[in-house]
Amino acid sequence: MKKTISTIKIFATCLCASLLICSCNKSEDKSLKIESEIKLDITRIYRHKGVILLNDSIVLTQNCPRIDIKNKDYVIYKQIEDINKPYKLIKKANNDTILIIKDSDSLLYKLLEM
Image 1: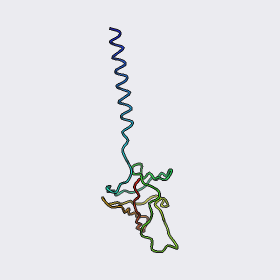
Image 2: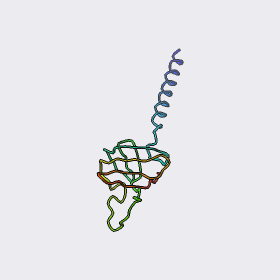
Image 3: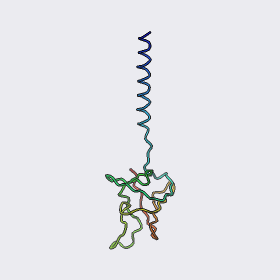
Image 4: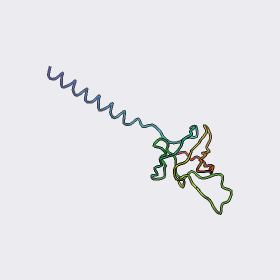
């Protein structure tokens, strides 16, 4: 009887541990993809080691280049990482162009997937 109870306790402990490990490993991919469509007001920005986390929900690379530069002598917001909050980020599905509206400027950037 004691052996059966011990076996059940060990089995239950192993089952709980495996469920905990599985739930921790299921992290959702927050990176912005070409297939993604998004329209988001950016109010929180966290920069770390080449990536930007926007509003704790979207991740993209800091190196997304600006693609609508006409005057190369003076470039404001050359890369996405140069933009400070708040701003609006818009991206259509199946398109590699990110539109950022900052104050009265409309800025276009090329999405570099991670």
